[in-house]
Image (spheres, rainbow, N blue to C red):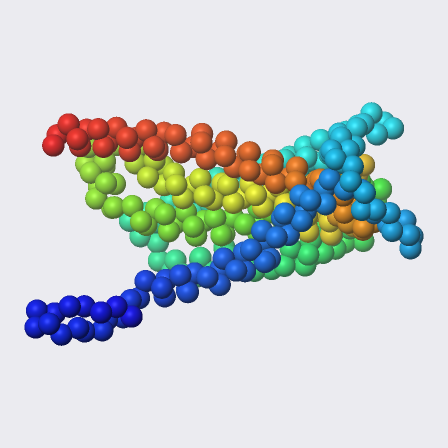
Length: 327
């Protein structure tokens, strides 16, 4: 409560509303600290300790420093560094699903936002392309597992057509299993990306497109010279969030391969590797993997943001310089 001095000498009471802003944002910070920040700090703390369970016997926690991190990069009996192998698997699976996801999403976003085409019934199409995102990934994976199993309809249909024989197993071939995982990730997320990109394109002033067309620019030139530079902040957001989701990929390959990463661990991701240590209550090794994933996510996110935002920032700087020179 504040008091304001009036010209007549009387003091009027006024209410300060500044504190209400802090009150409204306080629940977010409280929830973030309790459910995100504290667990992150505990994970980092546990990564420096040896703590696991053998049967009913609990070993640790014993401080081991960086031994957990060193052990992760030690080759196994076959000379393979497992964390690097699973990191490569994760990247391959994400790229295989993300490339068509962004290409199709961008084409659909341009198609639906085109004033020249003036597509009717956009609400219906938005609902249809977004519906796969509403299906649980585990249910989606079980559907694909049933369709492509040895007794599934796809197997029977291809056998009847003479394309394959009864000895063919989709889950014994690396390319087919990875292809199914990439296809499922594409189907689940391209609709969400399309809607976000559509929102970004509709936020661009339409007079810019009209001016470029009047100046003789074709559709490709308008896209690369007008649409893409102005859409870059939204595109960077979509790419970074998709990359974070790709690094954390777990449910689709877990269900589809029954947690085994068949064939020969080629579909096992970093989170599946982490989950294996959680089953044995090895909090030290699982914490170390989590920290490594956090570093990878932060590093790749910073690199992508820097590379894709640099041209956008340079254009803004040049625009401000030209504006300053005019003034």
